[in-house]
Image 1 (cartoon, rainbow, N blue to C red):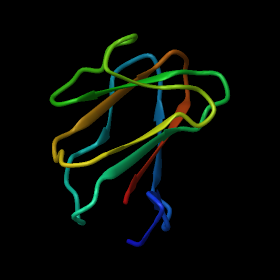
Image 2: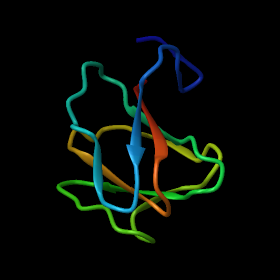
Image 3: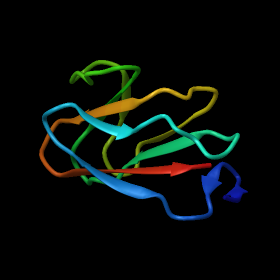
Image 4: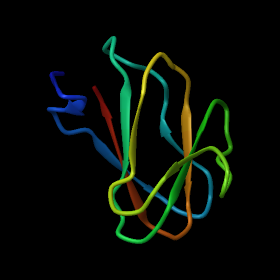
Length: 95
């Protein structure tokens, strides 16, 4: 996978996250780079937890609505997410 200024140049996957903790990445990476996570919902907030989970509202890594994102490098474990509302798409890609 190519990288252009820290953004994945190939599409990843979208995982639907709601009010229950959901595993959004298994931690298995096929590249030496990191993993990119983005909140693709206009109004819902997402929280990420690194490790065995579960994700908890108002705790962990916050992804703001309408594009909040992060690249996580040097971590190969699972990532869990929870959202403030139902059917919140979290985009996941290797970078």
